[in-house]
Amino acid sequence: DEVIDATKELQEKHTGALIVFAQSNNIKVTVDTGIPIQAVVSKELILSIFNTRSPLHDGAIIIDGSMIVAARCILPLTTTSKYEGHNLGTRHRAALGLSEQVDSIILIVSEETGWISLAHEGKLDLNIKYENLRDILSSLLSK
Image (cartoon, rainbow, N blue to C red; front, top):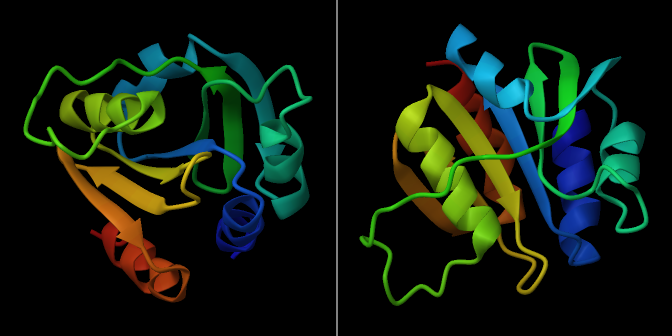
């Protein structure tokens, strides 16, 4: 609920965000690229991290269970060209790249369009309606 609520506000303000939900221990390499946080997930913390004036806003946050374990993490960019013509920005290419390498679900909020997208298993679901996000994300996280 905290992530969903934060996503709505990020979308409305066209504030870019990358939120990674770890699904395996293989995410440690990515966590190590960022700044350790170890804080309980909250809407306020997510909004603070992705505030453009925050030194942590670039990169991704990693959520493991109910904890934000790191922020400002660098994700690997995809090398695939299967989304040519979609004019994917760095956030989308980074989310897709991580989902190709590690069992994870990555929520993307586009700064330019305000679109909400999800990357998982090397696939990208673009422009998800906010009203559907909770159900889609819950379904993916319960697998």
